[in-house]
Amino acid sequence: MIPFLDSSRESAEVAEALTAAFARVRDGGTYVLGPEVEAFEREFAAYCERSHCIAVGSGLSALVLSLRASGVQSGDEVLVPAYTAVATWMAVSLLGATPIGVDVDPRTFNMDPSRIPSAVTPRTRAVVPVDLFGQPADMTPIAAIASSYGLEVVEDAAQAVGSRRQGTSVGSAAHAATFSFYPTKNLAALGDGGAVVTDDPEFADTVRLLRSYGWRKRGISEIVGGNSRLDELQAALLRVKLTRLDAWTERRRAIASRYLEALAPLSELTLPWFPSWAEPVWHLFVVEHRDRELLAARLGEMGIGTLVHYDPLPHLTPAYRAGGWRVGTFPVAERLAARALSLPLSPQLIDTEVEQVVAALVRATGGPA
Picture 1: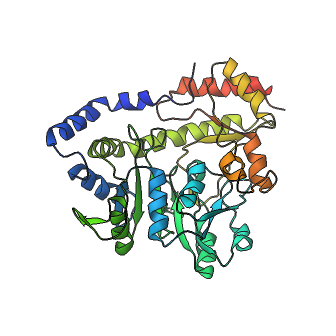
Picture 2: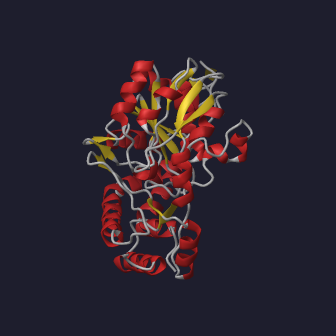
Picture 3: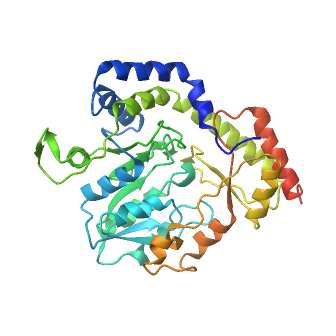
């Protein structure tokens, strides 16, 4: 059996260093907003080629705090991709604002910049492009359009740590970028975690206040904030994994290249596509098939685990249907969601397992036309 993801393999690869990090925190006596968090923030900011990093409790919190620091408030509208994890939409809703979906590019699954202008209204305050599946969104036109309408840009890079566009790190074309360290992510905590990166010192200062009761000095709330703090233990564990991230990314790319080469002859599959300026990190390898459920069942019978990302899409979940969203609103995203299937892809997959996945797909689809 090849599971879709076995996180224990990654932990086993760095087990000794993780144990040492745990002991360092245990013996240090500081467990929240201490030296490990400060060190991780410095290291992660440098990795992302940004001036500031604010570590928070989750990827959702990173989005919520970034949007709030950008001035989004109740009654505003925020443009979000139709194809994304529901957290992107939820972050907007939790501020009392309204997420406004924008349909996606059928090749990349990312927000289609050409559809943004028609979604803008006098209430639109910000746009949140998502680097879906680890592929950077087309930020050059998105940033230009946002600037022309006076919109803030917060990039949801939860799946794209280490990805680059036109030679620069994701997040560099936005006012701020947010990341998730959920256990399935490329840089994974052993629990929840997230971060905001930015080059704006005032924005960074505001997010720091918002993450911890509005405190700059303990007990003195300068603004109304909340409690969303990455703990010392997760920061220490993430520091260990950050040193391995580039090597793991290269392994992901090697596996993706093998899939792209070996599966190209299978006419029943539509394989991932990315533009020449993008350097994906392959958080997910997503194929399209006209009968996704049948393909998944056939692969399962052969011991190959798969998952679906994402069906239903956010606007078709009960939470958003209640607000009036309906089937047919975003035809491109809905067609992709009905066909998309994620294959196993993690750095710890060995070559023989990759070949098993390929062989199973050849059998399940009947081979080349």
